[in-house]
Amino acid sequence: MGYRVAIAGATGNVGREMLNILAERQFPADEVVALASRKSLGTEVSYGDTTLKTKDLDTFDFTGYDMALFAIGATATKEYAPKAAAAGCVVIDNSSLYRYEPDIPLIVPEVNPDAIEQYSNRNIIANPNCSTAQMVVALKPLHDRAKIKRVVVSTYQSVSGAGKEGLDELWDQTKAIYNPTTEVPPSKFQKQIAFNVIPQIDVFMEDGSTKEEWKMVAETKKIVDPSIKVTATCVRVPVFVGHSEAVNIETEDFLDEDEARDILRESPGIMVVDKREEGGYTTPIECVGDFATFISRIRQDSTIENGLNFWCVSDNLRKGAALNAVQIAELLGNRVLKKG
Image (cartoon, rainbow, N blue to C red; front, side, top):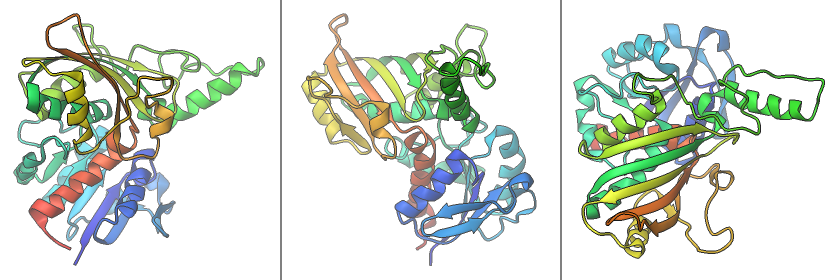
């Protein structure tokens, strides 16, 4: 007997990707239901070889469903997640709403799988921010070997992280560059994104960092180790899909770049592509549609005693959102619910 699964936000970029990945990974589901807001009621979405018609999230009864994957944003999640959880359905939430609650686990299965046991506190599990998820997959095995003291990360984040509106804005502005009679002013982003980079993702905090940067700090500490110091600069770039990160780490113990490379090659969820030649690294366009987090440019940082640099790339709609949520569902099924 398999699981009964609901996907809330099934018509959005992440919701559709959740359905694709559930089918690709042959998740043991007896029933999958697609949920959306009333304005999208009846919209058809693909699940493997079948087509699902969306049902109304507002009136849906979660009783009897094992788990629900939420991709509907924090405001709607605040309303509907407690209802699902109260009905006995475990919520795996992609929004930022519950990530920082001490009694709700924030999980990346390759990094902190044991935290899944905490799901029963409130029947809710949080999925981390897309930029955090791919980074901690790489940090954890290195931390286990040499204990990371400090992380300095600069991100290069694609517009898909801002949803369909972000994708549309980049597309429309790019076309307008070549059509002088058309003007597409910034709407989703703070400044023009086409042929530009924007050093702001989310709102500014009092200390001058943005909320996206704060998320990376807080989530890395919660997922990996609260003693790690993290500083981040998050930048939106004119790339449709795929987040990139330049990561510098300082460790307590010396870690040779060759050993680091070997450790990462053997670690779950990671693909090392690191050749010191023209094109011997992975770029965002090459990671689209892939499950892995790609690591390249691994090298010693000679400016400090125990330092390493590396380049980290992942499909943010997959590992940064939908894939990680499905992996949490698999972990929940294998270690806790044990059905199917």
